[in-house]
Image 1 (cartoon, rainbow, N blue to C red):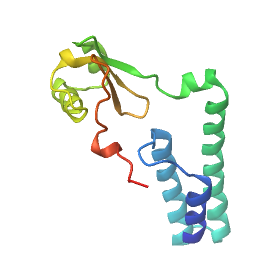
Image 2 (image 1 turned 135 degrees about the vertical axis):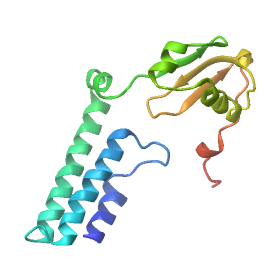
Image 3 (image 1 turned 180 degrees about the horizontal axis):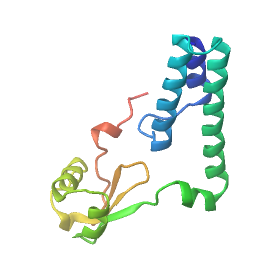
Image 4 (image 1 turned 90 degrees about the vertical axis):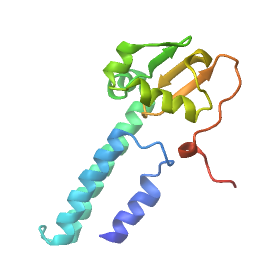
Amino acid sequence: MYWFLFLLFRFVLRRDVGSIGIADVLLLVLIADAAQNAMAGSYESITEGCLLVATIAGWNWLVDFATWRFASLRRVLEPQPLPLVRDGRLLRRNMRREFITVEELMSQLREHGLDSLEQVKAATMENDGQISVIRRDGASPPVPSARKHPPG
């Protein structure tokens, strides 16, 4: 079961670090439960467990493909980017919708090298939960440490 899961995640379900969405988390939870049952002997054979895990992974792949291929489906299944700051002004209704406090937003802005709202042309919560920032002066903000890629 271990080798089946290893190969599945290595070759079929490849993702970049930091691009894991809610569907991917759900997939991991479902696969963990299905694999646990296969390893604990709840199934007649390990093949049944592998088949269930492969079916779950197949459905995940199919949904990913469908959202990539069809924009109308993507609009339904993936959240749209949500503006949080526009021209230095907080969009409190959008912040309330996502339960983002001013302190949390300011922390994210500081990670982008900004210390006041007046420096922000736009800040947007992307569909993966990350906050992207466009500065008023047009300079590129530093990449927050959690998003930096290793050299090479």
